[in-house]
Length: 186
Length: 122
Image 1 (cartoon, rainbow over the protein chains, first blue to last red):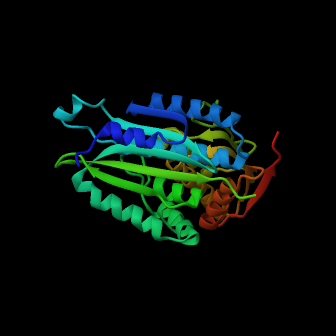
Image 2: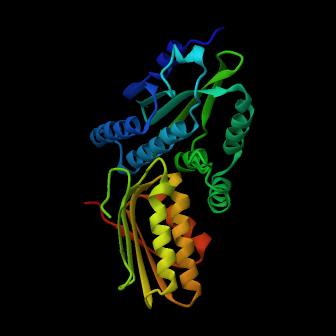
């Protein structure tokens, strides 16, 4: 089955959508998105610790996108904005979902997949140790990220990272990441 | 230095030995923002006040900032090792366990005792 961006986007738009965006991911966009979501969260009924988690995980996932988005080749540039990415923040029953999508070079898929699988396999204490280790010993990359984003997200949400890679063409896969923040049970 | 939507307000007073970082630290590129502070602390550590009091009152910080904040703490640790008193106050909002945990993580890495201060929500 051929990959269809619109299908993916619609699928990400399930639940009560707080914000949905498809296009270029740049610093101004990030600032605007954070503003919008913050004010929507203010009106939401969730407890403040959950709102804070959603906001802070959103910051991290947007900046992850920002730091890792690929420059697309010419034929794809005609179809997609430069620095193309997708972001949907939605709410379903007792959880928030932050869903991101971006193109990833085929050569990077294996590494990214292994990294997420590794994070998903760790217990909370192991994640905490990994976070501290990377914080203390790994240099910041020239992209500005510290390799901590996904670890931090997993640690804060306490939930597994849900992801998929769909083949777009020989060089690119579309990477979809779903992050869940759950309301604490009463 | 005044705060902005993505960066905290910063107050350094070398004479009194007071350092205050307050607000949000979520810039895309934190190194750029923190470099002057690291340089300032470098300079300060040559002739620090008898007692240095550091107040960290962050509402949010991203992982890009977290490494830079660790750099600041490492400079402070160096001052502490020279037998100068360094007091670190780590403020967090009521119920913000993530921020409390972040403080504890730093404390376990740099080996200066932190004072954790919970703030009531307004």
